[in-house]
Length: 112
Image (tube, rainbow, N blue to C red):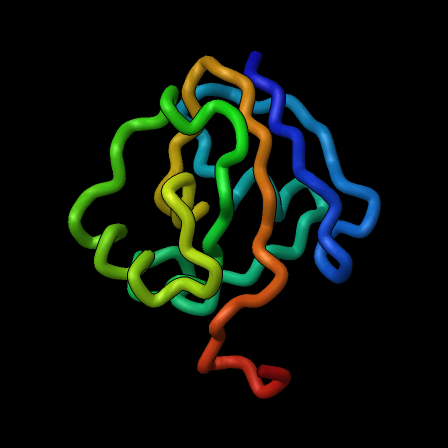
């Protein structure tokens, strides 16, 4: 079973996290099920970029982002070549190391 390692994030996951997954599971759902409170303002419909993550290890094992995801990634804060929307990432057989960017552009949230 693939292992997901989350790099510590000051607000959403101060201690970091590590958990096992099953191939085919959505990264956003896995993060939330394991106590990582990643935002997902569009309810995982791929129409925002609030669940933006950086895949620091295992990026090449993932299917490529489709056109809709690429369009939304263009709106993400801190975009990098390893950026993905966690609501669109289906975990493969390989381990992943995930970093949640420091900021998220969430126009639906009053705290931003």
